[in-house]
Length: 362
Image (cartoon, rainbow, N blue to C red; front, top):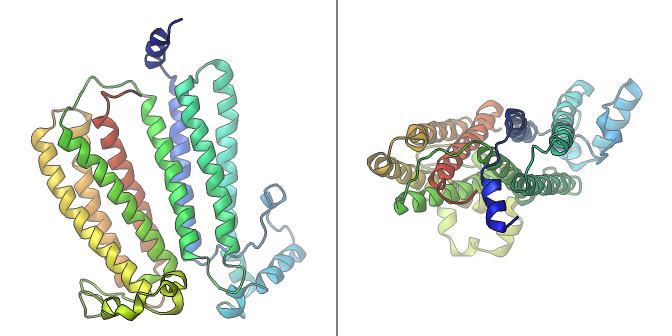
């Protein structure tokens, strides 16, 4: 068989509905894993389990003695000694639940992936392009799990919180897993006959996706540094449009970037960048929406387009309210909704970019 014939056959491959449903479940589970991770972080639960046990860690403590053993190990951590000293057993069980649930959900995803995959593979329902994409998803998922423990370990020695940069790297890899899997899901559906040749829409659709990725990374760093607690006001930052600490040359020291919690400089800088990019994204999205509605033909791209400005306004409002309620602690409900909103926005822009490239190879 010639390579051209093989390519044509691959392009014409029809994926069974069961494969598509399986991938949809996978996308949902990764989405929820990121959300559960947000709850775990905002409730301060991530350091409650001090060991990384892939097999034996599947079962939670089953009796009072096991609970006491886990509690004693947590009491040896900086987080307990510097922040949660005097915590009751019931309070410990609460934070333990969220970290345990976060890890259990990750393990569940492994089983949900592996068992159907083996069945579909031996049935011949997975072709080479899909196999390659799934291989990349597995690789990224393994990387996310590894960095998850590296992140947790950073908060078990000296400092009472996980390192903000390592947290952000863990989140970024998780978003890469989600994006790759969602894009993989889209490739299993029959291509619409729509072809959009507008270079401007393709170019700026990609740029919006890139800027959104940067914005989510900044949000991760801001969350890890608890930067919202330093400037819980809007539209100004404690009465200033640009915090004066950012304008002081002496503060632009490498130690302030590495040891970000030694003063307010990094919290001010990251929050200023996060706010500024949010404003820029709103302007760009509104302009893009106008251009796309003017130039794009009717079809799935144009039908989904209004979701983009709608969701970015919702996301901005969630960000503002999360910030305003940062009075001593980050509000868990609003913080989780803001993180989930970022994922929904990412999903929309990925969907739009996919349909802009329907005329390209799968």
